[in-house]
Amino acid sequence: MREIHKTLTLSAGGEARTFRLRKLDAFSGAQLLQLIRKHLPKTQEPGTTLASLIDPVFLSLSPEELRSLMTSCLSCTEVLLEAGYQPLLQQGEWSWPEAEHDSGLCLKLTLEEALWSLDSFFTGVGSTSRPAEAQA
Image (cartoon, rainbow, N blue to C red; front, side, top):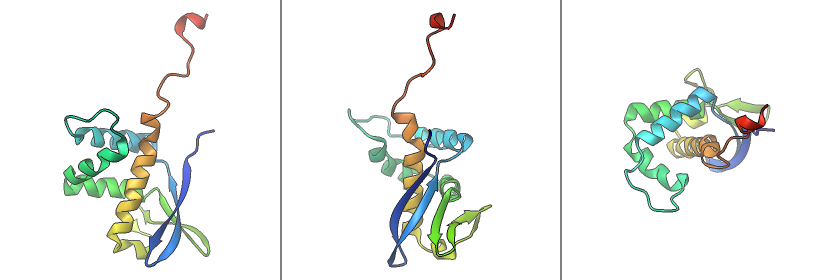
């Protein structure tokens, strides 16, 4: 079964908080891949990983692209509070005000979401369907 949720713990406001990420939907994931590919360096060393390419990609994004990326990623992120999980963003508005002025936390969560959502594009690539001649 496909995993669409991932939990991680990060420091927020001086205390450890548990966050739950939900994979981006297919349209947002494809848009993220398109954005990443648009900003990839022209040459990569052999053995280059997606994680090592994220810094140059993030640094080359326009303010509008970065805002769009962060909005997409943070809309799929929740924080665990006493009453349960609370979304960070809903319809582009902050649902958890503590995150609104924590740029470091929001960038880390955006990076984690982007890497995790694109993970399936770069591992286990290959068709699981049978070859045409075997489908008789």
